Each structure stands twice: as structure tokens, then as C-alpha cells.
Image (cartoon, rainbow, N blue to C red):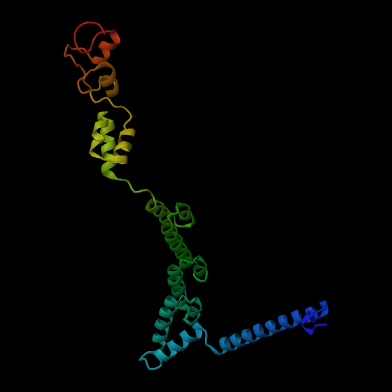
Length: 250
């Protein structure tokens, strides 16, 4: 028998061996994850928080100030607003806490921060201001209804009303008064079309016949109530069966 023809059987793992290998891999991965989490947690414990950093900076800045207490108050207010840290407001005297929360609430557009204000009047004013700013910023009139103060609420709704083109509205009014759609020709495109559609009656000579009727049907002058000058109104002549452009019947 040729030894080269002999092939050793392929090694096969039993289900038990495969389970042990898979378990070992999972255990190794879990250990790596736990080590990474532990390292990160240790790093976060040793690293000061942003709040701690802010307080340390304030203390360092104000240590040699001529009035350390006034310096701490001012620096704390600035840090709270710049870093959006409402917890810094707690470091202020009671007389300054509400103002700190108010400024921060307006900057963050956060109604919850207004809720930290102790004085009820200031809390309501803060809430109204933030609600108004949110409504205007989002262009949502319904948010104006959250404002408690009546005048503020009305002002909010007025600020969100569609802006009116006074020149356009004035021309539409004039065209309706004169019953003349051609006055809208001072505009172009969609604005011109919109103006003409808003003119309810187009009868510039006030003879009772629309411009379209006079031009396309009877051939009369839409700007002369008595086209043939015989003393009779065009519409009256037509109603009586006479030719409004001259002698004879229609």
C-alpha cells in the first residue's frame, strides 16, 4: 500500500468541546469589557466635573479680588449662564438665586428652569417670557396661549400674524372701489393675478355690464357707460333690445 495514499481522518470537535470553546471566548470578551469599563470609571472618578472645575476657577479668580464675595457672585452668575449650569445658582445668596435662574431659563429656553424661581411673581414673568420666545422662534401661534399675562399673550399673537403688504392691500381696495381689475396691472406675476381675483366686480364705467361682456359680447366701450352717446346707458339699451353702439335694434 502506498503511504501517500493514506490520509488521516479530519479532526472533529464534539458538541461539549465546542461549547467549552464558545464559553471561553465569551468569558474573554466579558473580561476585556469589564477592564475597559473599570479603567474609564477610575478615570472619571479622578477627573473633576465641569461643576467642580467652574467652582475652582471662580475661587481662584476671586481669591485676591478687592471684594471676594462680590467677585464670587458676579463670576458665578457668568459661569452659570455661559456653561448652562443651573446648579451654580445654588451657590449664590438667596437674593440673587431667582435672577440667576431667570437669565439661565431665557438663554436655554427652558420652562423647567423658571420653575426653580422661588418668588411667584418672578416665576410667572419668567414663564411668560420663555413661552413667548419659544412661540416666536418656532412660529407657532398656539404656544402664545401658554402666556398668562393678557397683554403679553396678545402681543405674541400679533407678532406672529402674517405681514400685510400695505401697498398691495391699498391697490386691491382701490380696484374694488373703482370696479376696475386693470388697476392691478401695476403688479406682476402671482401678485397681479391675486389682486385681480380679489376684485369682485369689474365694471369701471358702472353701467351694469362687466368688462368681459362689453368687450367680448356687445363690443361696447367698457370705460363709457353710454358708448354711442345717445343719452342711454349701454345696459339699459341692451335690456330694451336696442343697439348700444348706434341706431337700431340689437
